[in-house]
Figure: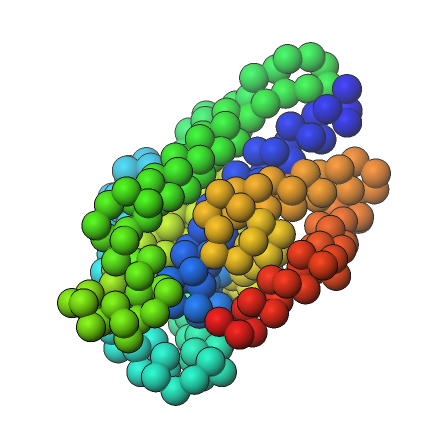
Length: 292
């Protein structure tokens, strides 16, 4: 039963990783950018939710609403200013730009909030800690279920938007060939801005869910970026449903590894990532990323 519990916990943890990976996958799929500041943006969203919830004495779920609006607007502005210029300078410049942005965000958060560890769990109420006990060795956390449901709905909703709406068709056309899309009246700059706004807002959502589930501090971003990147690569670069599958695979690998030895948890996830990256499929994805 302990192995079943490890699988269940890994499945639910995968929902959180899928949330983190969603925005990363979207930005790569539309703009061919690997955003190295993605994890720090998520933690910035967590701090914003923490500030709103603390100062207004409201639930983090209620504080999340203005956080998503603010972070979405910030993402749009970020693309139309910094990222738009870097996109015109080749494939390396966006990486350097987002790396620099990551450093700026980390140091800004460190200056503003010090290195103290925070958590939104106590303010979220009983849902953060309550669980459904099935047996003495198997329990299902309610917040883990909420996270998984939100991840499925978010990824499914974005996939539906991409496939069945005019904006989705514009994003797919711009991702395939922005110059040709511009010739038929699709404003690539506006599409990129909206895609970045969605990606940044989903990152803030993931950061807030992390803050409710566990603890966070200004240096938590790079770790979450690694997990998100691994989930994206495992599931397939630019694939939203694949991102969910990649997050689940990574989460299960970590919990099964922890069941073998607590010190083996993170390493098990990295090993699965390396095995997939070394496989023929992984080499194909790496080639696709390099030539995109």
